[in-house]
Length: 227
Ligand SMILES: [Zn+2]
Image: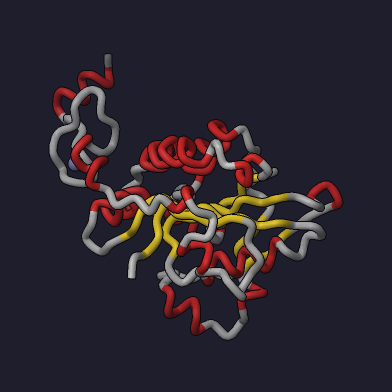
């Protein structure tokens, strides 16, 4: 009732094109849904996201749901998710991707879903990790436990831009820490992130996770930068 009243005065609009949403639409309209550039990575394990990590870290499986273009629908989605408190976008994308991923044997062998963590100061500033709803929805739909506490980010960077990240002298092995006991051994971890660009953040996370004996890594992202 209250929600209907709010919708009467502030009707929800599509994140992609800002047109009013119909009652059966959530976050993005049907037109934008059809126009969104899909990677279809899940149809081939030797996809371009997977190849990004060749010679860097051993990955079992890697994929991204969408292509990310500057000024495109996907950029709008990610921007609203990260900076405009539109956390429900993560739920929509989680449900969308779970449909593609649920029948893959490699995904069925995953033991835990691990989000790229924010530094605790960043988490306080933003108020939420933009990966939480995406990860929790994948967790529910794929029936795989969600573990946001295994990895910790040690280094705070204000912009988290690629440049400042790569210019750091600390080296990638100090950015993330992992705290584990024997019960974490021999697990297949699915790392999740928003946009895959150079892959350096995910590489650093993987380095930390691979300190756990018997660890295997897979990676799933919401989007991948298209070059
Ligand atoms: Zn739209």
